[in-house]
Figure 1 (cartoon, helix red, strand yellow):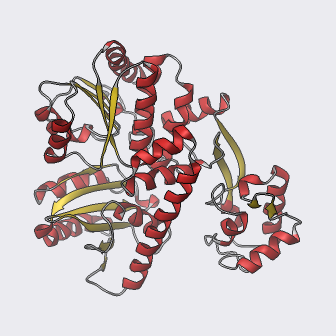
Figure 2 (cartoon, rainbow, N blue to C red; figure 1 turned 30 degrees about the horizontal axis):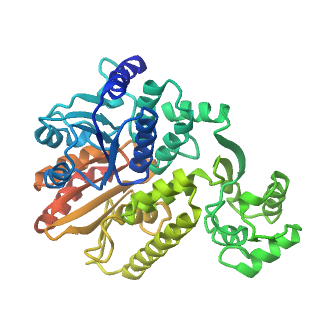
Length: 457
């Protein structure tokens, strides 16, 4: 299985090493795509190639045609995108050489010159592109074959996997686990047990603890004064010469003191806050950093991610994080306020549908849908979000709660149902999406409802 994948990657790597033409790199605009794009950029720089980077939220005939008209490179390198649009790519690139490094489901129609995707492996169980390797992981694997040693690119494979929600119950599996073991062995990432609080690097310790609401910590959650009193009772210094300290500033001993202090208070479920923490060599916890790169894409500023990653521009990082956080907070407030409004939120026997119209940006409807189902703001087993994508189309994002992952394959569902209403869909088993005509929304929803009734039967 792996040997076949290795051969596919080696063939593409050999081509990229010998090609002497400028290369157009087209990457998806989310965290995984941006991580893939960074790997591709660093690979091509090391190979001393000329290239241009472009990011797309999706590949359609119109959008790809526009990019190709603007960029006349004879070689096109797709990362974290392309396998599900092989038919469109094939039709528009007759006179160009195409390399695809992707992990999504592959459409049957169309041909590309070099297609690196673990889902293509035949005569055996495939490597699951939805759980075991991300688009960044595939691009890293290709880079490793081209360079021999691509250690400095390895963390981006893990960042991409984290952004694609492939770290389940705080653990990596499949090839992602292999990448993690290599990164840990080479001191490219610090893997340790500790407090797994969001904001480990980017928030003050007080705010990271204060905003912990799952589980609810009575006297700490949403209570800044109570949080400060708790930390001071443990003799934790909350400020240093640079201002408020973060969780990442603590010594291991200080972090253990906080853990013991929480245990002594007897909070229910507090053990859920302890676990494996993955800290990158830039000091950021991997979940936070993946969210940051995702924010760059969703805010239509993917190029900012290059500055953050390659230039360590953390001033820009904090600006992006703040702007994105405000948008997410505003959209979640809209959802909370609209509960009970059936024209906006429909409760069904299989879950919940968010019909956001123009009130939530289509780039962010997927993120909001994920947060809504993960935080129990909306009930599953399936939550679907819809937002106006263009004048005549809707962006659709669908998520399923973990315990139902074996009962439905969202990528197959979206591919089949979107096609029935002249749209296009795909993605992964537990997180998928698509684009459909606005005037066929009601028909689409009814087909989804009929299809998912089996979950409750």
